[in-house]
Image (cartoon, rainbow, N blue to C red; front, side, top):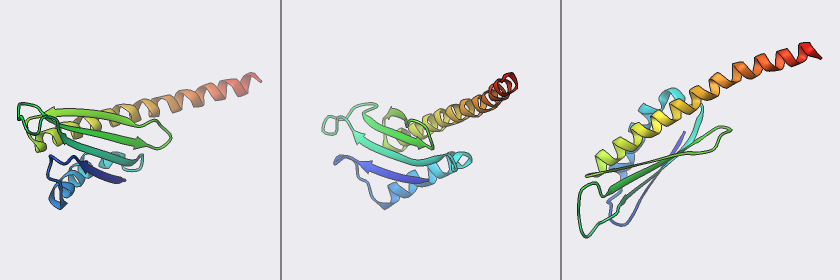
Length: 119
């Protein structure tokens, strides 16, 4: 699983931030590592010069094998909370999407078997 971290010019990125995000996502998406090919992370400060509550935004987009990308966004008061909130949301979304796909496969196999027996 590839993880790409991007920040705007108002958020100090760097090696520590990248390691934090990679560690968090590797831990939270570990059980889906064979299905998630890439996660793009975008961190920005929407009101950099003004300050304010919940003005830090973290958007994460997960790319799953054979499926459309899943994107989530979380706003919070600091970078760590914004990243943690987005990581939680992306993990829940990926889990839900993969579970749905796993449920559909057995049903499709049954339908294929029924169609073969009818022919």
